Image (tube, helix red, strand yellow):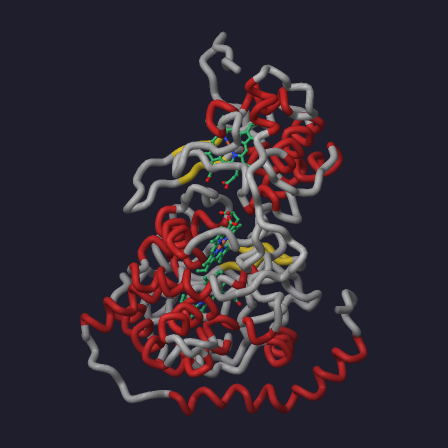
Amino acid sequence: MTKKIDIQRLTQAMKRVGAAAVLGMTTLAAHAAAPQSRNDTTLIAHGEYLARAGDCIACHSAPSGKPFAGGLKFDTPIGAIYSTNITPDRSTGIGSWTFAQFDRAVRAGVKPNGDTLYPAMPFPSYARLSQDDMHALYAYFTHGVAPVNQKNKPVDIVWPLSMRWPLGIWRHLFAPEPVSFDAKRYADPVIARGAYLVQGLGHCGACHTPRAATMQERALSEFDGPAFLAGGAAIDGWIPSSLRGNPRTGIGAWSEADLVQFLKTGRTQHSAAFGGMTDVVQHSMQHMNDADLTAIARYLKTLPSTDPQETPYAYDDTAARALRMGDASAPGAAVYRDNCTACHRSDGRGYNRVFPALGGNPVVQGKDATSLIHVLLTGSTLEGTKTAPSSFTMPAFGWRLNDQEVADVTNFVRTSWGNSGSTVSATDVAKVRKTVTVHAPDMPPGAALSH
Ligand code: HEC
Ligand code: HEC
Ligand code: HEC
């Protein structure tokens, strides 16, 4: 895998796709199907369910804005872009779009005027959607969503970088043809359903699959190679972990039931959802029915480990015994004893579905410790869901632990209780600290925090 973009090859490729670009724009129009019965409530309800599976609301609503009215900011290396209004308002939303126009935007990433969308809109994943599901989504977005009159924000990118034609070239080089998912590649219909949801609407790979230097996901399904869902780069300072069968750094030790529980409630005996995954659980996965969650879990469990050398996790009680005997001489042990044992316990086992276990936790042993440092500096809240309404908060420590202490305690949890994560330095912590906002808790004057 070469890291640098070969400019010459890219220019050649750009020339080659010049003609294809024009052709490509017309291929989808042929799919435009017969109009549906206009107020088919079952179809609209099904579309709503699918919109949840696709998590459209998370990206198409601004904080405290109206649902689906757009305006959420996405930072790109060249400037900011904003999600768009996809409510059925006729002047500012998609109310006047035909099915063919909607289908082409969602699956091929092309707007009615021919412009290509930024791939922040996960059209490379949605390319797999079936025509039936697209019709249900169209019914929901045109008849099930309240219209909101709100103009789209223009991109904050200076000309000439703001021109959209290079996106068209990117699309032709890297985005898949919008061809519906082929269930025949899977022998088991449940696994096929899971694959359809994970690769398509769920767009799990948009976060969990590593990207190439040219920003496309390195694999859109397991047929493209072992990079698929092998763990992505940080998004807002959180690392989407590996969803492969790796026994320590992936979900190899999780059962199908664990996965269902995690997606439904954000919590299991192994781990708790945080960062970008909180939104996925809140807006999307908790609303899926059990059959679909089981399908997703069963499919994920078919993805083999990417590292045959990785040994299974086995609990080791050395650290727990030392802490119980009052021996906190290991680096980071004292910081852990004073700040963490109340919730995560000296044995690192936490409290099932309340405070996550740290021993055996894939996130704690992952290759990249950025999320861990981040969660220690800023804290995080495990949000309640419909079936697990209680919410639990991990306090922020960034305001009272220095970089060395954070590094020590990070290393302590990454190497205790049988964990085998690599270690970090105070410099690594300082780097993460620069990218996050650390708040001290509000306390009444004179109050001291008990350790
Ligand atoms: C990860 C974020 C994300 C998700 C999830 C997402 N979108 Fe988008 N979408 C965007 C962004 C950002 C844009 C604007 C891109 C641009 O301006 O080039 C966009 C653009 C669009 C457009 C084009 C609108 C226009 O006026 O040009 C449509 C239609 C659309 N999205 C529909 C959907 C639907 C339907 C879903 C759910 C199935 C969805 N999106 C999920 C981020 C997202
Ligand atoms: C008041 C209870 C509490 C204390 C004290 C606490 N934590 Fe946590 N911790 C939590 C909760 C709750 C979560 C889940 C947060 C979420 O899901 O957003 C969590 C999450 C974590 C995670 C991420 C694991 C995962 O799967 O979500 C790590 C790592 C962690 N804590 C380490 C520590 C360390 C190290 C300390 C001490 C410096 C500490 N915690 C102190 C409650 C606590
Ligand atoms: C917006 C980015 C994003 C998307 C989209 C996303 N995830 Fe995640 N996911 C994360 C992050 C970040 C983590 C690490 C934090 C955590 O464990 O919650 C994570 C963690 C997980 C975990 C826990 C793994 C572990 O070892 O603790 C599972 C399981 C998971 N995701 C499944 C999925 C599935 C299935 C989908 C698609 C339906 C999906 N994710 C889509 C960002 C994302």
